[in-house]
Image (cartoon, rainbow, N blue to C red; front, side):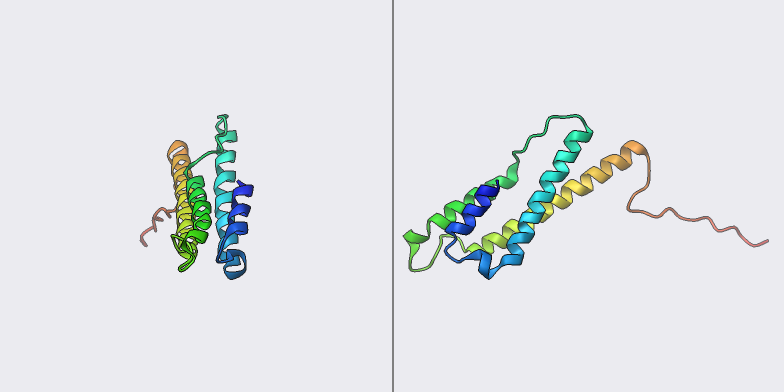
Length: 127
């Protein structure tokens, strides 16, 4: 996976690493956090870890898109790379947030505890 991300940077005609370094590194962070969370869950549940998931497909699209740049010299890539990067970042964030929320809800339901809520406090009435 690291090779595919590095490959996108190498063949990028708009030089994403120098034009949007924080965005690209934030994307890598969310993708890594998603994989680590899935690895920890697999370990906790004593399940085999499956490293493949749907978040790899946009990377393949981005690499193929970067390779189309020589064919579209008059306007760059087939899909705007910055728009693709921002869309991929949003998808990676939503995937990570969904995983985190789902895990918390499952733990909450299994353990019977309250999470993301504050139970009402009963105030004794003055006598």
